[in-house]
Amino acid sequence: MGLYILLVWVLLFIFTTFISQYINRSQERKADEYVFSLGIDKFVYADALIKLYSLNNTVIKFNKFDEKLQTHPSALRRIKFVLGDDFHDFIEDRGLS
Image 1 (cartoon, rainbow, N blue to C red):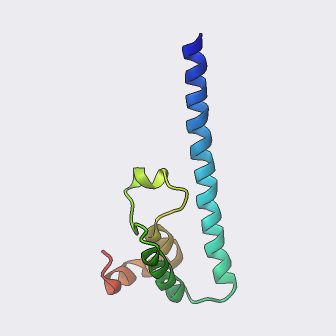
Image 2: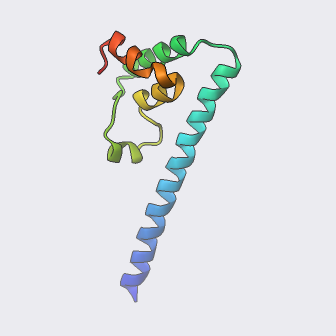
């Protein structure tokens, strides 16, 4: 019986952890959308994200599994969302590929 209770607690912890991280990442996306509603150019914002991540010594790119464990999306994923079709040219110009 005690093993089942432990299993339920572990599964509940894992489930709530992933749900809260998903919510945090979706709020980051909303924050990015808000920046555009202020009229800030998408390339200026993408450069600012790169600078912010580098100043904080934060990894710019995670693999898919590691990113699922993070509370925030990677810088490259945010930039890809921000720039859309211009993403690959931006990455090549900055030497981030």
